[in-house]
Length: 170
Image (cartoon, rainbow, N blue to C red; front, side, top):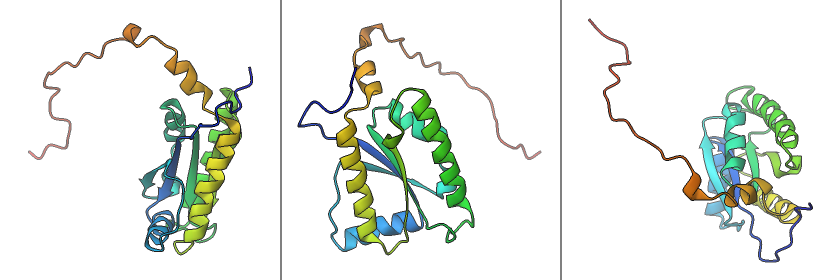
């Protein structure tokens, strides 16, 4: 089955992770300069892209994102020395996992930019949006929408005191 785009009205849902330094500053600069980028991108701030956990990426796809990307400081210019390099390694590993579960690896991207690069920030959003439009909707979203929600297990919340779990000062 080809899951390429068949609907001309398809607007991809994209999740973008960015660091609080260059990524956030690039977004802020884009806003201050009124640089336009697609509204379909939802942003998640991280202390550093080195904190990009593969689980975050996979969970974004699981929750219906059609594409995911990470915005990091330029290589050699990370505020946490090598955080962006760790982030790049994690994104590469996440891409392998994404391909193993049957999604296209192109649904996951990573961009490096400094805080003053508003145009690059907008270009990354445009690039990912167009890439995902060509790939079509996330097939995981289609399969999860096909499930009968009435058959889903009910969440049971047990309200009981689990006790103190912090450090005790006696």
